[in-house]
Length: 304
Image 1: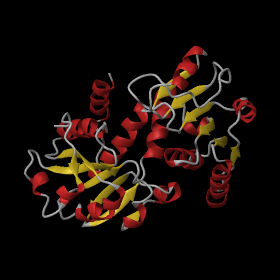
Image 2: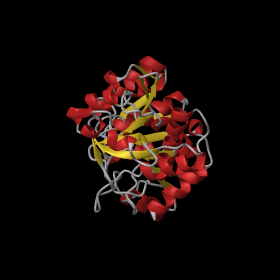
Image 3: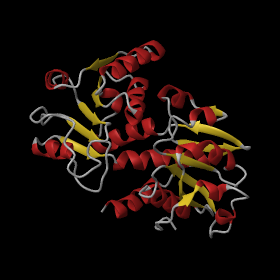
Image 4: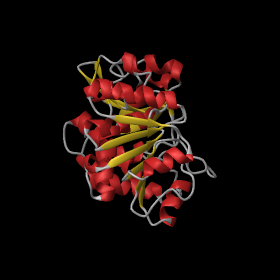
């Protein structure tokens, strides 16, 4: 359980979802995505389920965008307790919920669905998971750090930007490939939350200036997911006093992490964010503490 490469499909939820009911133990949690075959979530969630004695299992379900609405609607009838959502569903699922948390509304995305009395409730654990990861990796609260977010107006980047605003970081700077998107989010955050967010062009001179007053650099872009991807930062901009968090985890070392190590800057990958957002999803589903260390060990086994 949790170690199988098996991927199921949205159609498997139809007609009483017998394929999930007849499993031992029955599948009652899942991750929806397109693609979803490489998701690490089943490993950590199934380890947590075994540790806490819940007689269920967590599976991968391949759900194309066109099937998302029907797949979500079928979950209660199929006996599921909830699911996680990964790309490309985090934004698209919001109108399909009966309710969403305040944080999910601000972040404009959900990654966790809980089913209560047949109703779909949407949450976002990416932001809180990121905050917990920063404290764990660097021993300092996010609220104490001046943050530069590369790709801060995108999916995960937006959640991180909003989390930094919720925690009232001393300064928040977004560098986005499309300056207009970054500026639009900065204006939205200031209007809705009262936090000052700066948006800068993504070029060496503006990045160099911003890094002079930055404690934590976050890569929220996909750069690093593919072997051979360049770093999102030009060379020679990092200093040894910077903290570098790359939300990408690819089983190896990204170019950004290599840059950080070469300059002796403290650094970490997105594995800890995955761990903590998964733990917070577990706590939403079961209203009990997640077995964090068991989940961590499961993650280490697949991370190598």
